[in-house]
Image (tube, rainbow, N blue to C red; front, side, top):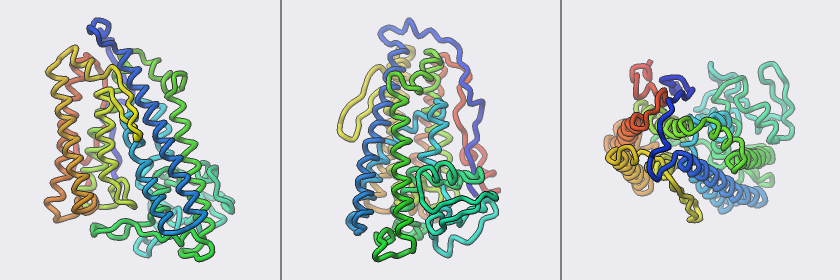
Length: 424
């Protein structure tokens, strides 16, 4: 059973008004500008790499060969890198939180989208749309409403199918819907191997899996929708964009609190807890973030790098372009130089541990194997990253205190805070 993260205090950020104006050469307003500039650059890179993926998808659909499928998969993985480094902008920014579910919701009940193996089962007590199979059905009945799905369009996916029945597992859009379509189910549990969908699943002339024309429609629609959603967020962080305006309206104290809320919540409740510790406790590969592609190690690493980017006020895009400026580290150092060094060192340690996890995934075993039951060595590699994340969160909490910010709430997780609840 999927256990959702619990927010340990109000999501509203209530802050005192700290005296940032006398911090020497460091000004909170400059820190907020750097933060917004990094968001703009990273979301723009997410859009650019998704456009490259879209061209690879078009090539696959025009010529459904194994080579073109491999190229589309590689492009999907490349597109994930800058996007995952934007997740640090969640939790504190309502504009981002209200939007994020359209592009990165997980886990998903893949039977909503396409065919699945018999081991998947035919029904779920929690989800009446568990095996709706949009690809195979031109007409769907959802919640008593008959839906015309003869043509699979972005509007159908986002307006009718995403979270159908208000069920979060009905993920019809975003990176993970595209991932499932490109890879298919990973049926290896904790053995080696990712999803193995054949390119012929997209070839109407030599169709495997049935409904190849509709599967191609779905992949095209989901990809086009992702591009539109990413453009919306990239535009929102431009100088006159809605996300920048929302941040500015909070004032300096509220803006800095937003940065710290995103760092602490991603570090602790979301990444250390829901994405890593929960799967490790259950030894369940269904709890890995990029479960069809075996790309989870990279997604976790990029989340860690995203936190470091914001702390250091420095982001390097896929093309090597740098965005940098006044940083949160600078602001904390003006108050407590030793604490700033401590936070920097702890984040660097977590990055090193995440890089070790990446190295193991690329040379020894995939992430879903690392979290498998009885794999003490693999479990330890994952646990080391979790420990690093928890440790750096405690240092981030001390940075909150040093900046005299009150009422900041980091997201929690039962897998860290109430382990017994995980097994109930």
